[in-house]
Image (cartoon, rainbow, N blue to C red; front, side, top):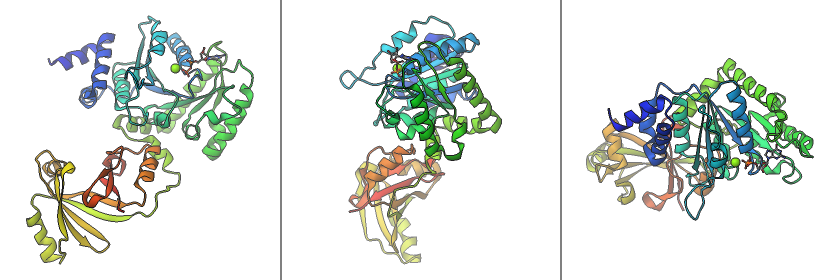
Amino acid sequence: MEELDLLIASALEGNKRAISKLISRVEQGSSSEVIRKLAGKLGKAKVIGITGPPGAGKSTLTNALISLFRQRRETVGVVAIDPTSPFTGGAILGDRVRLNSDPDEGVFFRSMGTRGAYGGLSVATRGAINVLDACGYDVIIIETVGVGQGEVEIINHADLVMVLAVPGLGDDIQAIKAGLLEIGDIFVVNKSDLPGADRVAVELRAGISLSAGEKYEQIPIIMVSAETGMGLDKLLDSIDNVFEKLNDSGEILLRRALRLSGGSRLGLQVNKGESKMKCLHFDHIGVAVKNLEDAAKFYEAVLGIKPTGIEEVEEQKVKVMFMPCGDCEFELLESTSPDGPVARFIEKYGEGVQHIAIRVDDIDAALAELKEKGIRLIDETPRYGAGGARIIFIHPKATNGVLLELCERK
Ligand SMILES: Nc1nc2c(ncn2[C@@H]2O[C@H](COP(=O)(O)OP(=O)(O)O)[C@@H](O)[C@H]2O)c(=O)[nH]1
Ligand SMILES: [Mg+2]
């Protein structure tokens, strides 16, 4: 057996060192390889995401929930996302020490840094969840950092999202970003042993009613104190209840399928909101061809289109021939290297439409909106394409199979 296979076999038997090593592999970038080998064992765990501002008590609550699940003999895996120090590149280990003091066999704890360019949850997060899922942990709790744009991304990784609010962080629920109000399956007012908790609950109810509309009354708001234990039994009931509803409606299948395929539930959720993108019209259609001159014959002789120029885009390892057609144009693409994206496309699918480009008036705004909606992207920042346009590509997974380019021409 290969080393990785041995490691996996050992992890599946419940060896914590092996599980830990496997997660490290995933963090170091072999996520897809590991996950391929674990396929078939995935999708059983109840994955619970906990988000909320720093200091709200996410770690304390995680600790308390672990005990409750353990009392029911459920095993628990915890993935804590810690802020990565900009100076050392290392994660702050406070949570790890605290939670790891529990020597219980049925609990596995792992903390990892945020790696995404904008503080998001990383591919490694998904990988770690999948490893713990495959290794048979009944419940997996993900504790987020509590800051940054990426917080709402938790919805893509968890089956159930719990949003924490607390009294004492200013005089309203401003500390909870608007986006979080839309993604909670359960809202928890923690630190209810402190004054002001009732008001936080009332404000939460009002906030949720704005974002969740008619459904808002069904969304539970549970008052607890993670420290004293008050209300935690009710919270556990509520968690069970939400999972039961998700099971009954079949919604759990959709959530898991998206989670396992790397899809974006956030995208689905937020897509109901308005788009601010303006000035969308087709810019060009990229056609992967083996040879520009050969391919041009059809377009010239049959369609009567004259090429207006050829340009090499070094970064994309491609030569582009421009063939204007009305307001739009064909871009014939010939690879300049066997490992370029166009060469790989032809190898996989043969010649054909490789991408479609839409023009936008402000690519930075478009990119920000796509990120906010959790749309899967190929580019995190704009790059330069043919004709000096600033471009980004959206992943085909997000577009029902089309490699979609957005471009801004000045
Ligand atoms: N009074 C009170 N303090 C709490 C409660 N839960 C957590 N804390 C305290 O709040 C602080 C932050 O908690 P922590 O779990 O680290 O928050 P996190 O940053 O969201 O993970 C700690 O000092 C906890 O002891 C609670 O229910 N009541
Ligand atoms: Mg914490």
